[in-house]
Every structure is written in C-alpha cells, then in structure tokens.
Length: 312
Length: 294
Image (cartoon, rainbow over all chains, first blue to last red; front, side):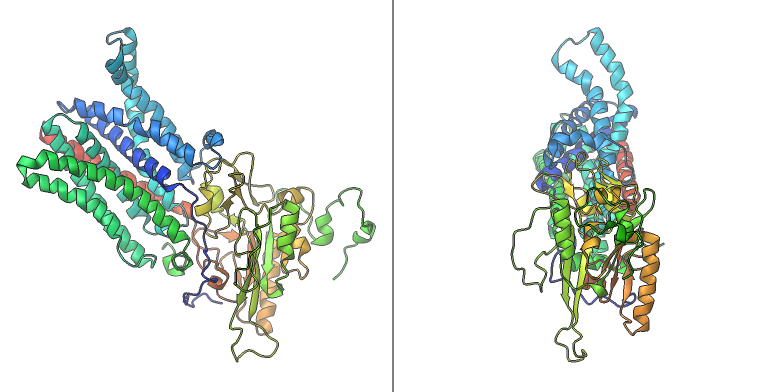
C-alpha cells in the first residue's frame, strides 16, 4: 500500500496527467476582463446612486454605460469560444449550482437585461425624444432595474475566479481564495480606471484614482498570497514576476501622480491605462498558466498529494 | 470457467435477435435500470493485448489515431482522448533490476478508462446538462446537447474528457450506454481475454476486488492495493468512489493516476465568498472616498 509512502517524483513517461482547458485564451481572457469591468462599474454606479452623493451623477451615468461592455462584446467573445457556437442557447437549459459556468451564464443574462434597462434612459437622452412619455416610463423601469443589475454585476465581477478554481488545473485549483480576491480587486481597479479616463470632474477623478489604488493594493496583496499558497502546495517554484509587475506598475504610477502635482493628470491617465492593460493581460496570463500547469504531470501529480487535501 | 445454464440455448453463431440479458451469460450480471454499474480493472491480470481498445473503437465507431511509435514501451496510444476511450498503459518497473526472480518481469499493464466518478467533476461542471448520470449510474455526454464549451475538460481530475476537433463536442467512455440498454456487457469487458476488466454491479465488484486483494496479499503480493474503492486512494477530497476502479501494484503516479484527487466543485463556495467579500469591502471604501469630498 503506497498510502504513507511519499511520491518520488515519478511520472508516466512525462506524459500529461490532465487535459488543459481547450479555451481560446484571448477570447476568454477578454470576456473575464470585460465582465469584471462592467460588473464592478454597475455595482459602483448603483452604490453611488443610492448613497445620493452629490455631483457623483456623471460617474453613475458612465458606470451604467460601461456596464454594457460585457453584454455586448463579452457575450460575443464567449459564444465565439464555444466549439459548437450555434448551440450557445443550451447554456440556459438548466441551473447548476456546482458549475460556476452555469451560474455565470445566468448572471450574464440577468446582468445584460438589467443593465440595458438601467442604461436605457441615458441612451434615450443621448438620442431622441427627451421628454416624451416613453422617456418617463423608461426612467421608472431603470430605477427598478438598478438593484438586480448591481447584484448580477457583483456575481459577474467575481464568479470567473471560481470558474477557474473549480477545475483540476493545478494553478487554478491551488490558492482558490487568493485568485478570487485578485479577480474581484482587479475588477474594481479596472472599473475605477475606466471611469477615471472618461470622468470630467477633477474631484471625482481623484476619488476614482484612490479607489483604483485601493483595488490595486488589494490585488497586489492577493497575488503575493496566492503565489505563497501555490508554493506551499508545491505547484509553483518562484513568484510570478509578470503578475506582480502588472499590478505594481499602475499602482506606482497612481501614487507618483500625488507627488508630481503639475503632471498629476497625465500620469494618472497613464496609470489608468496601465491598470486596464494589466488587468486584461493578467486574466489572459492566469488562463495560460493554468492550462500549462495542467499539461505538466510533475505539477498536477504534486498537487494531488495527500498533504494538499482540504483539512476537515 | 463455468457456463451459465442459459448458455447452451444460444450456441448458434448467426443470431436472429439479441440474446435477452446477454450480460448474464458473458459477465454473470443482469443489467437493470436503477442499479449502479461499473468496471473493476485488475491490473495483475492484464497482458497488454489491447483487445479492449480495439473492441471499444469497433463498437463505438471511433476513428483511429494517426499510427506512430511513441517510444513509451508498447504504449503507442498515449492517452485517453475524444476518440480513444480505453487506453492500455505499459509501465516498465525495474525491468533490469537484479533482485527480480527469474521469469518475473516488472512489466505492468493497466487498461485505463473513464472512472464514472461519484461525484463526477465533469458532470458537476457541465453548464448545459449534456453530461448526465444515467439510469445505470454511469456518466454520459449527450451529443445532441453538448455545445463544446470545454469546461468538463479541465474539471476532470483524471484527464479523461476531451473535445473532438472533428465535431466540436466533448467525448468520453459511455460505459457502453447503448449496450447496457440492450442488456449487453460493455465491449471492452466482453473482449478482455483474461478478465482483467470485469463488468458488474459496483457493490458486487467492490466485494470481489477486496477478496482478490486478500488473496494477493496472502500469496505474498503485498504491493497490491485498490484505487478508487470507497476510502482508498483515488476516492479522496470529496470523490466518494469511482464506479470504474482498479487493482494496482505500483504507486498511482506510475500509472499517471493522481494519488489524492479532489472534487473541484468544493471550491465554488469558498471562492465566491472570497470574491464577493472583497468586492463588498471595496464598494464600502468607494462610498467612503466619494462621501469624503462631497
């Protein structure tokens, strides 16, 4: 019985023990990024709306408009990633609580509907018939849709981490909580950065900068923590310098803007763009790393050692 | 081997119809819906003939792989895939060691297959319900529903499920769902000349496996152990048992099997909770930041 014997590192001719996810990393990564950005933007918009904070109204408006990115572009990315795209509607055959992909599909549908309704008066205002009965009616509907939109947005901004963690791919499965915190914080940081780039009020820009800094700081901490958890589990040798740099660079730029008041606006804009780029690349990188780890038997067999079993 | 009393009635080679409950004649099992069926693969009996691989491909109309030599002993199949649902592994264990007694090779063979897990990670991950648990307690992909999202592929802790590039759907062993419906033994088990692959009711097979294990230990094969039976290696971390389980004699890793696999769905709630808590915390921070300058 090899119960207590420690694994000597032997593999089966070095052949993969798991199959890597057959995802298109750019498509799925883009979706995860947009879902995070849109979801967090919608939650922030509704929170600011209900808190009735004075002159935050432009941020609320931009948040509701940004929340349309995931429904419009993200959904297309997801359908294109299917290997049988014409059957995309089968995602809504049932609700399965053990499958984050099932929960996420429903969250995306709910979010798309509620976000579209919540943003409808804005689209009307931007377009046609400003004070018609239809506009008033849409305004009422929009108020009703805000809370469901924010709730679905919260799920949309976070469930993608559990989608990856609820697999057997070593780098997704090890350090599940750390990945969830990273994704949630990155979602908020990217929403704040995107809102900051379109904001016109200097005061709200500074608030959004501060929120982006808070998100990036938490993401950096969670990146270090999940790296540590993966090292403890024996599936990672060195910290991921790429992921750390992707967070540290925009964070340093945001902080630097405080010390250079004359160039603050320009530096903050670069920082926000860097945060958005970093967030997108982080998602794609995490997906790629997970797939590569699944193809390495010495990594997957290491994670599947008894010392990594969850403690009861 | 004793013949079943019903066997002489079906001696003709050209059959006009299915033999009723044929599995009773070939495996001693009557296949009925509502019972739990699986495989017990006893690797100490495997001779590496690959009859199971061929029978599986023949019955299930699976395309051949591109023929090539891998250089990995006699294993030129390589891995389970969308078009290979039985795969015989060849492990050359200390073949040249002097300590081995004459005529005792350290050549281990093992016919791998989908484990039809309880709880099945692929089934739990499938967002469309294409993967389902059948009336025979096996796990099957419904080809008319699968949309090829590919989420079952990384979910599987054993690297079994695969997406076919030919049709864009997930494929894996069905435990011969169609044959079970017709009362037949699965093709691989029926073709196995040494009964290394045994088909039957899971509880019956587990009992038989324990007796076989006791026998092997009794005759001095202390290295033998069960993989995937309840409470054994392979049935860990939320996987209660594997309907297709194994008797092995080397470490699980030698056969490319995870020693202590876990149930991926157990990570859903902790992950969602951590993510939502972080989001809520940052939203409170946002409100505080915005209110400060109001």
